[in-house]
Length: 387
Image (cartoon, rainbow, N blue to C red):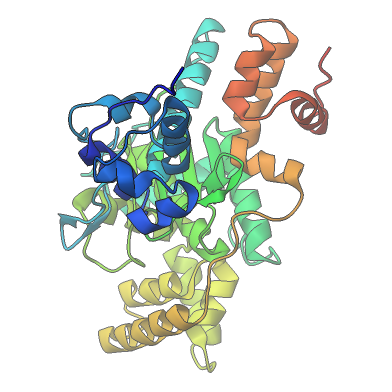
C-alpha cells in the first residue's frame, strides 16, 4: 500500500516559507523534498506537511487554502515613521504572541467578572485633548512612585522589575519576554515591535519585547501604560522618540517621558551633570532611561539646542549599530523568568483557579505554557501548594 500524498498549492508553500522569513534553500535543509513540491514535481505526505507547518509556525489548516490569507494584526498598528505604517506583514512570532496574550486577557476578564470585581477606573480615563504631561504625573501618583525613586535604584534591571511590580499592583498584567512563550529558538524582533497594550476595564495587559535593552524596556513600559490610560490598544515600534509618529504615539511618548523623567527633576539633575563629558548618559543613569530618551527630554525642556540633540542622536545610533546594545531574551533562572514571561498577577489567578477546582490542570497548563512538574514547582515559588 503506497504512501498517501497531499496536493498543496505551490503558492501556499511559498507563502508559508516567506511568512516565516525563510527562503526555499533554507527550508530544503530541513525538508529536502520542499523544492520539488514547489515545482509540482512531487507532493508532500501528511506527515511532511505537518513538519512544514511546525517549521514555519503556520496553522496547519492554512496550507489547504486556495490562496494566502490576508494576515493582519488583531489590534491597531502604531509602528509608524513619518505617519506611514511600516510594520508590513506581521511575523508568526508577533501574531502568536498577540493571540496568546488575547487568550490570557479573555480568561482573566471572565474570571474577574465571575467574582464581581469592579472595573479599573484609570483605564481609558484620559483623552487626547488632555495634556500628556499632566497625565504622566497622574500615572506616577497612582503608582505611588516617590520623587527620585529611580535615582536610588542601583541598576536598570532592578528598576524595570520595580516598575513592573508597581504596575501589576494596580491590576494591569505586565509581561516582558524576548521569545515566543518559552521557546528560545523563536526570539522576538526588536526591529519589528517594542511592545503592545491590550486595553480592558477589568484585565488590561502590557507586553514588552524583552529582547530589547533594559533601558529601552523602561520607556516601553511607561509608553504602553500611557496607552492603557488613554484606552487605546495597539502595537508600538517607536523609533527612539524621534518626533514623527502618529498623534496617539506622540501623546503616549510625552506622557511616558514625564512619567519617567519629570521636568522639575530633570532640570535639577541637568544642573549637576551638564558639564560632564557625557551628560546625557549621566542623566540616563539617574532616571533609568536610555541616553536617547534623556537627550530628547533635555531638548523638549529647552536645556539643549536642536543641533546638540541630533548630533548626539546620530553618534549614539551609529555606536549602537556597531555594538549590540540589546540584552538576551533568555538566560537566568527559569522560574524567575516566568514571573515576567507569564506575569505574577495572571499566574496567581490561574494557580488559584486550579487549586480551587474552577479549572482543570490541562487548561492551566495551556494558559501558562507550563506543564506537569514545572507547573507545580513554579506554583510553589509563588506560594501556592497545589494538591
